[in-house]
Image (cartoon, rainbow, N blue to C red; front, side, top):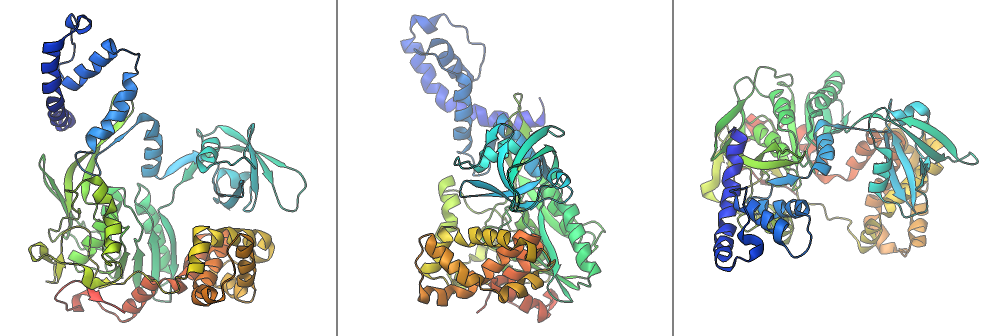
Length: 548
C-alpha cells in the first residue's frame, strides 16, 4: 500500500462507517428477496450501497453519475480547498498549471454578439497567417458565431484543439469587402503569469505577477532582467488579485532575494512531518529594494512571497490584508483520469504564522469572509482589524507581525472610494468603458498604431475629445448624462478610457503605465520607495501603519 492510499483510506472509511451502520442494520431487519441472496464483492460500505442501488433500485440508474455528484459533497466536509477534479476538467487544470494550451493565439472579446480580436499573440499561429487586432471572427469551420448570442465557452471550444490540427476561420476586416478566410494550424499558446515589467522612473521598476504557474519563474526572471538592464535599484512587485498557484514557482522567486540559509516557509500536517524550505545561494536581486503590494484577493503563493519578504525584513508589504489561503494540496491521480486534490499540510511563514484563515464555520462562511471584511470596514480603516496577542510573532529584525489568517501589510492603504458616483456605477455595471475603448481603438487604429509607448498614446488622447464621445455613447446605451456625476468621476473615467484604448493598441505595456495615475496603492508605494524606508530602519511596535 503506497503513501497516497494510506492518506485516502481513513477519510473514506470514516464516512462509510457513519452511513453504513444504520443502513446495515436496516438491511438485516428488512431484507427483501431482491437483496437477500446477493453476494457483496466490496467490503467498503459506500461501495456496498452503490452496489445495492445498482442491482436492486426500482428504476435504472447510472451509478457513475451518482459517484461524480457525491464525491464533492463528501469532500466539502473537510476543508475549503480539498477538491475533486473530474476527468473532463483535467486538461484545463493541467494547462493552467503548465502555463500553456493549444489554440490559435488570439485574445478576443464578445461585444454585440460579435467575436472581436483584441490582441494577437506575437509569433503565434494567428500572427503567422495574418490575423490582426480589430478583426471580427464570424465563422469557425462550419459554425457561424456572429449574431447568434455566442458564449465565451463556445468560442474557446471551437478555437482550441490538439496541437498541429487545422481550423478554418472566417474574418470580417474593416476596409475589406466580404469575408477573409484563414486556415490556421493550432499550436502551443503560453498563458502568461507576468503581465508587465516597466520602469516607473529611472530607479524604480514595476512588475505585475497575476498568477503562479510552472512558467512564472522564468517569466519573472526575464522581466527582472529587463528592469535591471534599465537601471532599477528598487522594484515594486504587484501581487494584488493574484490567487496563487504553483509552489515551486514562488519558492524559486523568493530564493532570488534572500541570502543562503534564510527561511522561506515551512509546511506541517498531522500525517506530514515539518518540512522547511530555505534559500540557496542564488540571490540575484540581493541588492534591490523590494516593495510588495497585496490586497484581499492575494492568496496562497502570493502570501508565501509576501510573508517571506516581511518575516526576513527583506521588503516592505503595502496594501491590505491578504485572503488567507494557507493549505497544502497534494494532487492524487485516480484510475479514470480524474484526481483528488487532498489537503495534507498547512503553510507557515518563517516567523511561525499560519497563513490559513479559519474555516470552522463552514466553507460558505469561509468564502464569504471577504464580504464580511467590507461589512466591518476592514478595507477602509486599519483600526477595524482586531489583533490577537496570542497570535503575535516577530520578524528577523524584531518587528511585531500578527497571525490569524492572511498577511498583514506593513503599510495599510484603504480601498479608494473617491470619485465613486452613481453615474460611474451605472457605466461600470454595463461595461461601457471597456466596450467604448475597443470601438474607439478600432476606429482610430491607423493613427494610434503609430505610437509604441504608453506616454505617447496618453499624450495623443489628452488632445482628443474621447471623453465627450464617451458621454454621448453612454447616453445611447441608456445612461443619461449627469453633470454632477461626470464632475465627480471624470478623472477616473478618462484615465480608464485612455488605459483601455492603449491596451487595445500595444497591450499591457500601454495599460499599466496609464492606469497608474489613479492607482492609489501604487502611488503610495512609489512614495514609500522614494522615502528610502529601508526595512532595517523601520521602527514600529506593530506591522500596520495607518496612511492617509
